Length: 412
Ligand SMILES: [Zn+2]
Image (tube, rainbow, N blue to C red; front, side, top):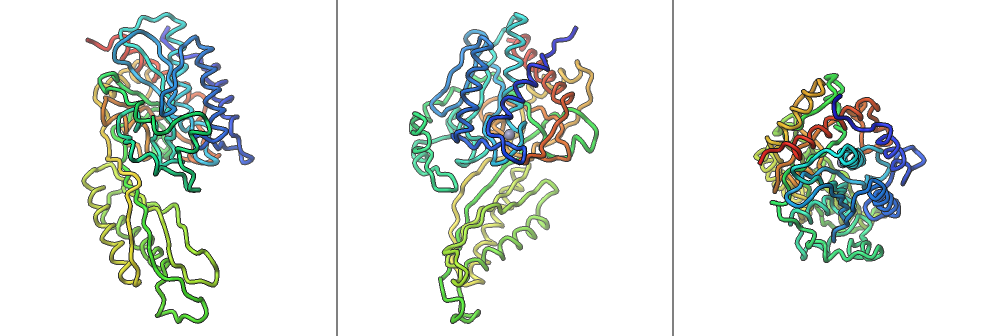
């Protein structure tokens, strides 16, 4: 009989974790270092201990469990945090399926040539900008950045972590030598419609989309809404509206079908009905799987920002919030996933990941791979996120065979 996970046990874990931070709409809210996230962390530490594995929490708050001895590890994981009112599988699936794989391999006593290591990364979803844990692990987090890292309410990560007894300034010491990471594998829901539309259960991820997120502030002038004639105004919101519309046109005209632009945050100051908007901050986020196209769209967008500001009599300032190049995934990991898929006899297709994942951060320093299972109607970051149990089970079994290949017979 083939190696397989204990699905009822994984299902129980998913249900228990899905109850932590549950919302009235049936989703979950576990922003990083919220009370719900802290409960989820404690719960995971308990589950790791119950599996007879040793847990460790690093200076960035990343949680680890290790099986096997010394040497470069085959890592598996994802994240426990969620967007506000998100789904129960985004992140949780990768962590809990990874835990189940370690548990299964341990209880079967399968010999390992390389250790296996489970990881649950801190703040993948971005309360504090995203990827705090994987940046720290890969050495991409510099001490100078940390005091300025805040959530959208202006709460500093330094203060939030301190409330939980963690010193954010120590997070860069969570860095691991990339040579310690033999491979990293992440099982995740697709969060898009491609697998479902093609009626294929498993996605073999070829590359992960790059993200270029900037914060744009238009500076105008506060004036009386009644006494200031329209042509005399410096209305910061007008510049923002122009950018949102023309940015979309730019990306549709110049980009590829994989290009995305999203303006998800707009803050108007002073935000009063009878005052002309003096200042508007917005986030402007580009995604692309081609590094060259992403660079091009970013450059053209900056030119557009200058142009719309000038046309509206405003000044504009731009700060880079997130700049993650697209990451092609490693052949060695993709080959292991492919072999696992074939061993299980399930259909698969190759596709790109259009959402950000810790795998793209790890993939910059070590061989990384991703396995997708389908998302019903492509829904995610929503309480409507859903993947059928048999698909979750199949994905977790592909993960198990992949990890076993990489850790047990992975060659030299
Ligand atoms: Zn995720």
